[in-house]
Image (cartoon, rainbow, N blue to C red; front, side, top):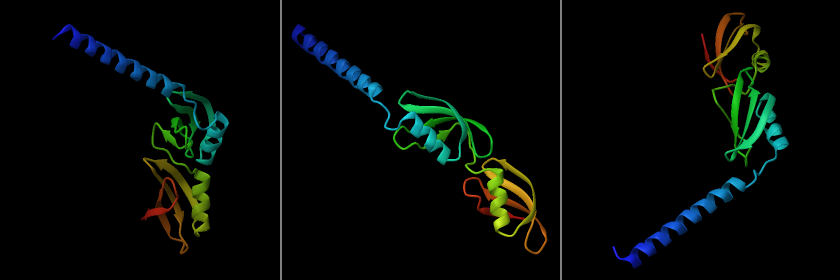
Length: 147
């Protein structure tokens, strides 16, 4: 390779590296669209409680909180929309919500309410007084199965 081609290649490589570095620096310096207090409010609207350790790093908000089912979770939060991404599957509604949903549908003697693997389960008596076991969607509380 000629000296002229080698020099041209070195200049091109140096320029490309400089532009890459400048682009990364600009991306890291860009502030989040939502403030910390807005993120906390967004998380509360999504059913999270006891929100703490809120921090902006690596381009996203992070936080620790309790989900609707009481689980402790670590969250990554979209800095533009406030949508939370928990580190494990959680329910956005809680046991009190499940009891209220079932009561509003005529179920009585509601007990053994539990959340596991994305589904709420409960035992109750239906309108006819028959004992039933129920399975409910972890996010909406909609009954997805009975036996």
